[in-house]
Amino acid sequence: MQDSKVLTAEEKQREIEKIQADKRFVGHPVGVLTIGLKFMCNSFSYYGLTSILIYYLYAALPAGLGLTKTEASQLLSLYYALVIICGVIGSYMADRVFGPRMAIRLTCIVMPIAYLLLAIPGLGIVGYAGAQGMMLFSSMLGGRSMDALTAKLYKKGDTRKDSAFAITYVISNIGACVPGITGTIALVAGYHTAFFACAVFSLIGSIFFIVSEKKSFGIIGTEPDDPLPPAERRTAVLKLIAGVAVVAALLSFLFTNRIITITQFANAVSSVGVVAPVAYLLYIMLSPKTTKEERARLVYIIPMFIAVSFTLLVNYQATTVLAIYAETNVNRNLFGFEITPAAYWTLNAFFAVIFGAVLTGIWGKLGKKQPSTPAKMGIGTALYGISILFMIIPY
Image (cartoon, rainbow, N blue to C red; front, side, top):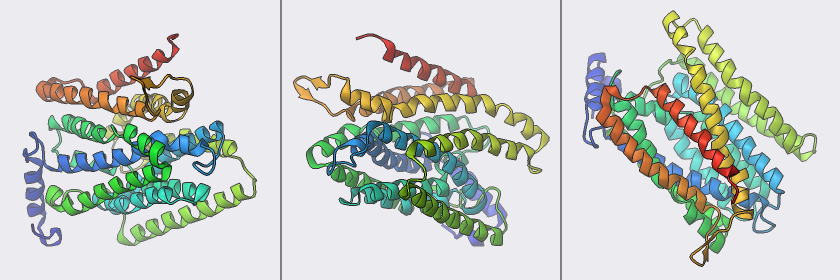
């Protein structure tokens, strides 16, 4: 393949169109498989970690960190809120500084290190803080670049696009079926061994993407969609690094000297988590680069934003409140064997694979007759709401 720097604009467009017309992977560009397998490794690592992390936080020393259940829940809830905020920053950086391909490459370097910090015995709360910090930094670098890159594999109006996201979702949840495995590893060999397994799969996914990206995507995603001038890009990167360093130092000082508590910090971040996406939406709407037609369409994002907010509100309970409930209030005896509470995450992923595969086929068959993306989000949000009602059924 020719170097993108020596291609003319017409040659670049022909190469992009050739990749977009590709149907080698179940009727889709082969890049969908690359992204799906990267998602799968990410899911093995991420869900393998989050399914046992809360138990590690409140497990008695030296096996865990010896925090209270309330502190452990607050720390994880805090992390999830910060991920959303950092993801907004990451999407901006990918869109204006790095481009999705470079953004993903950077996360490929950072994420394995984050898991390795948790895998090293003896680091305690410092190791945990370092790992979570690296994960948040990864979000600041990458944002939603994987989704953006998936969308770039299709021309505008290509009905295969929604099906592609369903495919990557199904493949991703194959990796998400492992919490039962990491839970068992933690039970038999300790939490640090389980975290090491997560680090290994994160590294495998990173290596796979870096090795295969050029053949899978060609020149797609190599440039930012709305690039800053070169000098401003360098400044933006320096500001990001400096900002992370200053915030990390400040938080370290505040917590070390007991000036603020976990609860106070969690409440502050939750408030920012509500305001930041709204502020970003207003920034986009008021931007001179946003046309009148685009500004009118942005209004329709608001219901979807609310739907996603409620969906995540339910979803994140699985690794905090419901995770504690599974360990303390659920009879986990299965045919004479006691399963780990982390195994309940496996059930979630198992059904996601089944239903995701079915829906992928349905969207593919319906083509242009399939429901709109907002309609699908509305149906999904309603199902999330119904799912939590099962918890009120007496047993």
